[in-house]
Image (cartoon, rainbow, N blue to C red; front, side):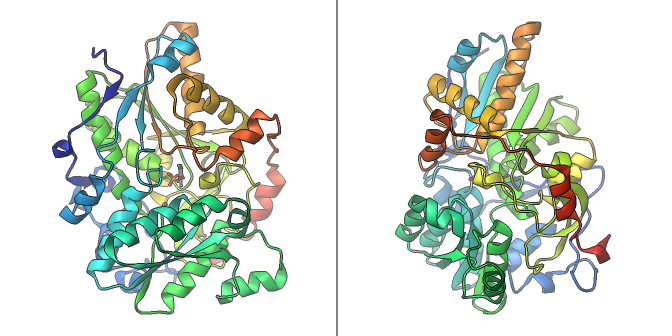
Length: 454
Ligand SMILES: *Cc1c(COP(=O)(O)O)cnc(C)c1O
């Protein structure tokens, strides 16, 4: 086995195709439905929102999709990303386990999200679209899309959840630096926003509300399209470059993962890391356990219902069959903003139903403790989201310490925390609390699921 700490690929070794797992599954995921007719949505239903190429990728049955040369060129700014062996963390834990992490914090905005923002902007620009709209929470996705739009000469308009807009100015400033416009959501600029503001003028907003606003604006202007940073099949497709690179890097390391863990918000960094390994598992070449880790405050996989629900609060999106806490569910304001989405990718949900992955939920104080331990050992302060996966890695590594098992663990550190340091500040000051999520709150949110689609 290799004694190195860092496994890097040359630019020329970067994968040139994304991997679509759907044809390799025992059954395909259920289709998205039109909210009025309950018929599967067709390309013509999605055309006001997405360019034709992305609609095609959403339903493609091809195993591999070529990455356009223009996209590869932008990817080369930071890809291939490194795979690290966490030797210092292993030592600090005193574990015989071998821990590896794929680090996506090297991207221009410090997370995995540009992996899909760049191709989305590219296909829109190629089809003559002038402007993209989107939502953002803490600002990871907004800054990724703003960066990508700047690369391809598109205008970009971002609805940012009001609470983050007020409390976290730095990513908003990054979005504006890349040339995009930011509106706090709910905003008076859309019917969806005005409706919320009438009922609650001080609404802190939510991702679901911001999606409604961005979708409404895109649907009302033929030169504008909408871009989503997670959840959809084409987003997970683009993220598979993470796992494809990691597979090659594991070859360099001469090792094979026994356990793969990833954090899940909408499921994109998880799917991106895991799907290429799941292909190898389904083909019988490797046999890792695959585990999704979600926040206890927003546990769509472990406590949600697998049913058709809207992707947004106003009910403007197609109905998607997914693990959901209900489109009206508003999670407590935990620091892992990227994990505060009411639903889970339909593809990840389907794979969970098929029994191909496990899921666990973790409270944020345990996650931040893991993040601090990781930072002190490895020198990278992980974003609040991947601390969930790191906490699960550490838990498993300590189990190996008890049993003496030399398990090989892989995770993705899908972003760094340089713009989330106030969250670490609160943890270090002992001010972080874990609020319990009662079953009553989940039941109440599930009560407003779209009745007609069940
Ligand atoms: C957005 C985000 C997430 C959550 O989204 P997924 O689609 O589940 O990956 C996780 N980590 C980081 C760093 C993010 O920016």
